[in-house]
Length: 152
Image (cartoon, rainbow, N blue to C red; front, top):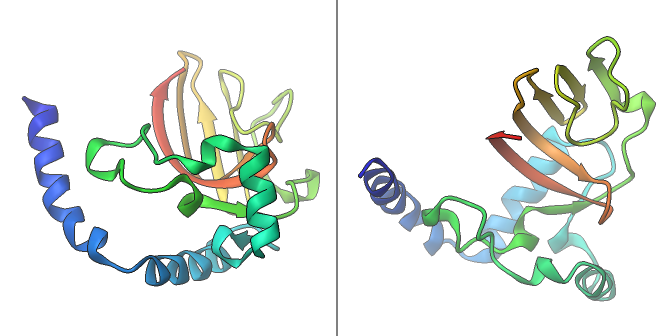
């Protein structure tokens, strides 16, 4: 019942957003990435057609919608939340837990956290993982705007 009510409320609130033209959404996300992301990001909509096609061929799941989002947001195309840019480096680290074995991994080991320009993530000793910001996908080599809290 709780999920039903949450989806109903969120669905009502997202209806105006769904009516926005994709061009307006893309423009907002371009500006958002420049303001809050790591340096050098380019939103999917800023890529040339050849770059878009190469990325879609390399990562076919980007052709789908976000089925991993709450139901009212599952209409969002995965490409809407994708940016290209240079991978984070040691110089990108703003803060890291002592003893973090690999601070550039997008999901910290239990008991560790990392803060990069445009991204923060932590995993508690009990395995609860949270993240917010531009997550570097170290297997598919792109950034994705991500907000998540989950049991690892």
